[in-house]
Every structure is written in structure tokens, then in C-alpha cells.
Length: 151
Image: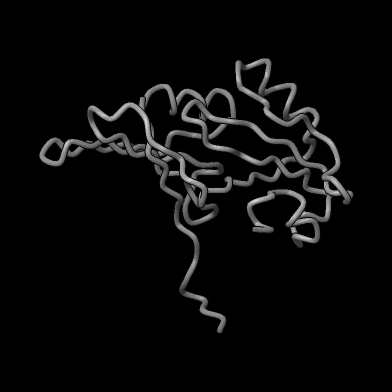
């Protein structure tokens, strides 16, 4: 059922060092810090980041820092965040030049033609870069992109 009122707002990630993560998403991936808030009573801080001003044009990333918690177990359910890029090869070069960690260099996905790359943020979250002129937007190569999808 198509619902014109529903849309993605944000994805929340728990982080161990809020400023380190803000620096990564702004300086390495080029997002904008849209807003922050702090809740002293419940001991957490939030930062919302995104492209093109975030909502309503695009969904945002919500970084949540629970005071005093410096790391989290990833678990096996989390896959990755995907970002469309015009040129995955150039994006990897820029990310590495900015100090980012490229864990899979740009290139075609195994068994397909979609050009992808993977980057890891400071907390270990995987971010997939998908070259915009590829077929990945239709997820024709979905099982090859992330082995956890095939499980």
C-alpha cells in the first residue's frame, strides 16, 4: 500500500565519541551538521547530519552519544548505510585524503556491473558508496553487495 504521508526521516547510530563522529560525517563524507541537542537528565547527546539541509529533501543520520559509553557491539543484524555518489573511485580518493578508512576500494560488485565501495566510520559502521549511474538503485546485485542479505 502506497502511503504519501510516510517517508524516511533518519537512521540512528549510537557512537562512542560524538565529536569524532561529527568530524567524520562532516569532514570525510561532506555532510552538514544540521542540529544538536543534549539531555542532561537522561545523559545523552544527539547530532543530526545530512545532505542538502536534511529533511524534507533527504533523510538524516542521527548520532546518539550515551554519556560514558565509548563503544557498542555491532551484532550481525546491521548491514550498512548506502550513499549515492557520482563517481565511486573519486569519492574513495577524497575520503582517503581526508583521513577516512576505505575498506573496499571502488569497483564492480562480484558477478555484476554495479560500481560500489565501502567505508568504515570511526565506530566501525559500514557505509556503502554506490556509483549513481549503476544498476544498484534497482538492487539487481543486492545479494552480491552485502553477504548478510543472502543469509
